[in-house]
Image (cartoon, rainbow, N blue to C red):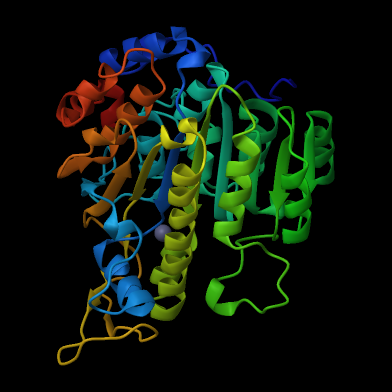
Length: 407
Ligand SMILES: [Zn+2]
């Protein structure tokens, strides 16, 4: 592994004492656990997907009286999303909370309020010998995937985030957009690190069919964000989110020690920032299709697949979306009449659904830092230990209020 050019500390080897105490101890327990105990864990994040984005997607996909795949999952609740020092979070702070169980400032990529690196669930999985994967329809260097595989003071440091991904966290599978941040020299490093670099859906199919335990795949399907589903032509060479997820599952499940996979539907947020209902809804539809792929995979495969923890949530709500069709119900193919109160994020709570072992810890009202211990627990030899922290987020949040946090 190549060393960092800068003096920034990496996530590895950081003393556990820099975490909130209980979580740090639990992480050591998790790291001591044998790889054989690891369960597959899949976290799916609809970026910017509030409850009404789901409802608008429901109306379009299956009509007012229907239900999306995600809505039919039995265990569910709602999640508060505030950042450590802001009522309204950005994707970086929320992804840091999901990936590390610690709240930080808006813009933070898996670093704490004091700037120290926070070990991520992806890094913990890798240290346990599990395979790891990141899938996003945004740039793979964008805030949400970045907070699982990089450590940067600013989400805008996407060149450095690309380096962190290739040099340090090295997920076995990375699929998304953002090739503009992977220069020729870095792609050469990626190849030397064992990555096959691919750029089209066809190449993804070939790479998936040929995947072995030692394969590493870096799929960069666009220079920036991947194209909105609403704007794609049939001739597009970009894979759909559901295709990326199916490939990631095929590639990661070759590994005998289990895997962690994060999937982001990154463009729900962008459609909502633009207050563009149709773009937003078609991204929700694509996310639901990806969830169906995951659900079918857990049902149709081996006992190990059935033993997979799947959590589905959002990082925050975007647009303050309301639904304003007063007089009629809608049938599939119709769009709701939207009301938008913002072109930014809001502090509205977001949904969570879960199935598989450990998902019983999903509660009616949670905070985003409660999700990390559920995933940690699923990877642990001592199930029930980490998950006892769920719902006690005031304790861990309070631990963040150190003097340097007030600057
Ligand atoms: Zn956003």
